[in-house]
Length: 259
Image 1 (cartoon, rainbow, N blue to C red):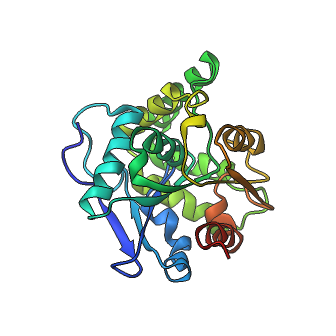
Image 2: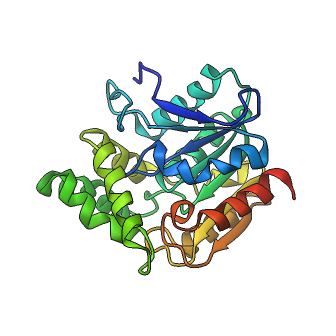
Image 3: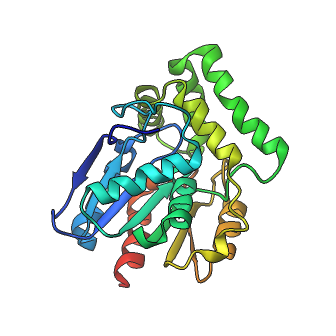
């Protein structure tokens, strides 16, 4: 289904434990450039992928579903020669990371779910809205779609250069049919019944101004995973890791190092 290894970049000590970063539905590996300081700070080999079907990665041979993307992340961990990884997922990347922890628990040392949710399959209306999102992209084209979408992903006071960068990453990374397939994978996902089985240490992070998957969605995740910690980033929207990298990295570092 996903024949070629996905593109990824690496940063930090080559022999350090792996921190695998999975981006959101409209982004790519470079959304995690602000997290590079975590490599030295936490003693991790930070690896961020372009999900199959995004930017530099080849298209899947057929629609992967959320299981297929989770299995591709599992295969990347193995290809990197690691027995397990700390996994950081943002938004759709967090849903993929959750499915990875459910399907391959032996590969997930810890889980960091940022501005994410249990999936969009919690009710038919929400699922239908997610599946329909790609039609807007098709109607106006990726550049106009990105310009329209980017301001909705950050807080209202975000600097223009950040909004421009979010739009650029989206327009450089998203294409059909993978965007439709990713939207479908979100629409099929409903992890509510699976969360209690997640046994690894888990941190849930959310921006207090996130209007896409906000504090209520984060609380549902944290309440469902045994022992999960919930951290709110003040002044951040849906992309807390890019909007407030210092506060975000502080939360991740405390979680990974215990200090």
